Length: 274
Ligand SMILES: NC(=O)C1=CN([C@@H]2O[C@H](COP(=O)(O)OP(=O)(O)OC[C@H]3O[C@@H](n4cnc5c(N)ncnc54)[C@H](OP(=O)(O)O)[C@@H]3O)[C@@H](O)[C@H]2O)C=CC1
Ligand SMILES: O=C(O)[C@@H]1CCC=N1
Image (cartoon, rainbow, N blue to C red; front, side, top):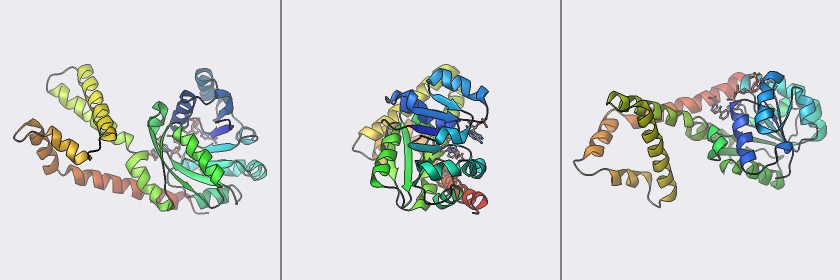
């Protein structure tokens, strides 16, 4: 991918995508990241070999793709700062902000922009990201392909044609690494309570999560069948799963994902009044 890509914001999600892009073979010299303070940027420049800038407008001039990777709460200020340059240079704009809808960001950027909304997740850092993408009507086929290539460099990509579905994408993948990290925390704590060392418990739990996810990915069986295959009748797993079902784990997951999607919609309303 020879495109010049500028990330506005150099935090957790931007550096995860940048790290994944570099690992996939993208030249660091084609990448730029911005942040308000050069002290935050110095270690990123040193570690990744990318260009860095504290001036957002200067960083987007000459970019083929601009990835907006700041917190939703400061997106409006950032867009207004970028508006004049973007109106002149017309890059593909990709927003990774939760909640904020494409029309709002487009308007903040002066209108008529080719804009993709992307909901990525932090495992992009290790090439195992999962991103949901939505394109507005100004995005060309070539730009759609470019956005796909960019995010496929760090994981899998699913396009949605109805923008409102990005709230569900946020619930099932954008926020979801945190659910699995919580599960790992809980399993480690429980195993330590049963006498294992924290190190041993953590290694076993992580490898088991990795193994289960890899099996689910590679198998032609669905997760319910794979689960059933671990559950010997009258055995240990059956007892554990019975406990989780009786404690309404499915309802807990459904309610948490509902709260997540609802928060994405609330943020759109709170921040997106044009
Ligand atoms: N974290 C995640 O798992 C995911 C996050 N997202 C979205 O990604 C976006 C970024 O989130 P995340 O990376 O977690 O947040 P971070 O707070 O880690 O990163 C935000 C970055 O923006 C920088 N920044 C702040 N103000 C400006 C400015 N005026 N100009 C340029 N850069 C600025 C910050 O610098 P400083 O630190 O100096 O303030 C920081 O580098 C959010 O919109 C979020 O919704 C989407 C999917 C997953
Ligand atoms: O928690 C958040 O708001 C961001 C969006 C998805 C993951 N992190």
